[in-house]
Image (tube, rainbow over all chains, first blue to last red):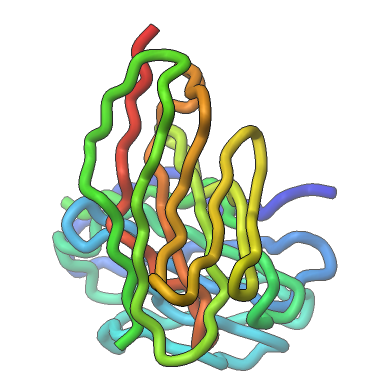
Length: 114
Length: 110
């Protein structure tokens, strides 16, 4: 079974631009979560989608948004990019996001904002 | 709020040495606990998990026991290899999200 895939793997943008990242979960998984990883803040939860609905949200500004499609693929959008948005963005999927389930992570998209 | 605290790195060991990475947590409920490993340039891979008190997770020679009385989930391996060099993250799952520790970098020298 194929793992979680993320595209693109690397991205360079300039301040003020917007960016869209894509995540394809493991087949059959309906829950998709996004995390931001930076050297200073570590791994932080952005949001989780299940059945095309945002079910949980972390403490990030409204510039960070996402959506999920009927095939469970998810996109994350960051508008008006800031230098501090440079990070590794990780997507994780699970069957339904339940308490005892395992979150499987993709390789990440490394975003550099200049 | 819920949180995870890991011992700080980097940790440098010789091959075949014993490894312990301490992890303690604070949670209002009964979370599931995980150890993830991240190799350079890659995403996170699940190493092991435990979903209730006294559960022992194990994989690839690594072990961790869910200790509710001490709110701990320490990672151990009896004999590390150079290929174990990576960053290790302790995490808890509660309230619909994973909460991670800050990560512990392990370097194993031949």
